[in-house]
Length: 340
Image (cartoon, rainbow, N blue to C red; front, side, top):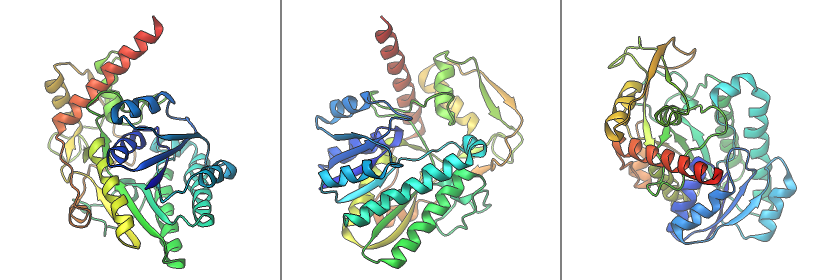
């Protein structure tokens, strides 16, 4: 069975490629390398001892997409290729609507043309906004607080309308919470271009002395220690959730939406303290003012994924911190080796 993974060399995409290959799927990747590296291919193949088919292409170019479908009989598509920074989306909303909506339409049109109607959409807990209902179930109202989150809401609405127009589609929407960690091999992990937007890469960069300190935004929330609480999930658990979702695609038609999270919330200071303890390093941080729009608490109710996908997160916060630091150290070693 052959699956297409858009953005397959990125953080979540690369880990999902590993899990798909290890579950005997043939994997085709299209990636424009805007936030990834072609060397990830070799590292995926080193982990799995299997090959992927790679296209350096962009979803804004319809001919790039058509080439993939013309040269491969694609059974299902996992769609990761999108812009994902909340802060950047506030400054460049047109970029986000173009990359996350227009390009997705190009992809779906190609799928219709080649009658490949099985689709997994990479959505986000950002669709929920600042809902007060915790833990958050899939029935919670969606109300995004920024352009990035709004593109995910629109993407979900688009897919609902598409399925309503053609019941041959089989669609799974996966709403991620906060993926962190890296593959236990240390060969793949999160390596964002420029300044990271997520907590863990900032922590690991402070630990490796790439940056002098970590800014913690607010310590006056109504939480265990005043800092924001989020549901952090190991990226390998998240990737395994996609394999379960692919199996769902082939067992039923319809449109199904699932939270992928642990169901537990950890504060920023709990993450920092656990990272320090597990890895025996010090993280220098400074408390600064809250960021506008950040909810105090956000964590998942993942019961539906457990019941319908037979999936649940297995890795601990300690695993997430340990694997993140291993990846960062290996990344540093590769950079030093390349310089020598």
